[in-house]
Length: 294
Image 1: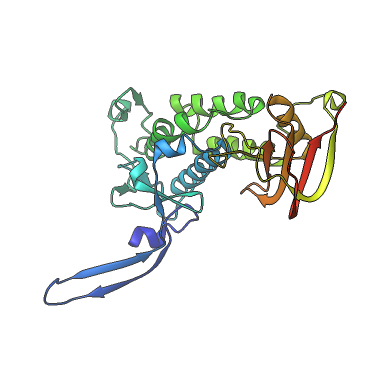
Image 2: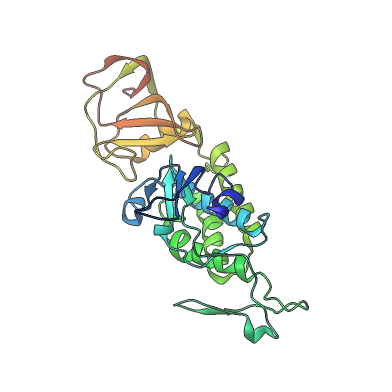
């Protein structure tokens, strides 16, 4: 409870309050009231869009940066598994701080500074002050790599972002970066994605022509694509109308798409892609684009 209060951060479960109750049935009872989150289910996360999986990795990067520079010093999570985290409106938050440790590991030489993991070990330097340099930070970072980054970060990402994301995975897996550089690279990926700079240049002349039908939608004629925001249809986020057109061109069954007024956490618009437009119906706040006949 004290750690939740001292380590307040958007990616630490929010503590709303607490009460102390001393009754005859249960003496010395302390009850904490926190925000409610959903358990992290890795199998489900692997089936979600890359954009949502990237948000979790970015949340984790921001959390680890906060823990490395917290008011208490560098904090490490000794029990670092998905079950120690919850999702609140798409943001990853640590909920269990029972196994958090603030003290760095004392050492006489680097042989005292071995980070042991099931797959491999790392030896860190021993500082002149007699502390293992960055051990708390590096333990958090490698656990983030082996439990989250390696599964959630690169798969089905935009192809132009893959080198940057692969670099983040490789550097955290080898502990060649600290949390500052890791977060800087994650924020760079967010900027490229949110600004549309990740889009590879394509010749606009090669795109098919689409007829715009404002205030309309196509209720049927769905097809499935992956990863979709909707199980029974192809619902994807786009940066621009040009990207929506390129996606439709890349799907052989796509003949039309419907731009909604819904946006994702990065501000990208959600678009339904359709196999045809035999039934176009009025729909406020939606715009239909149908492939024009040659």
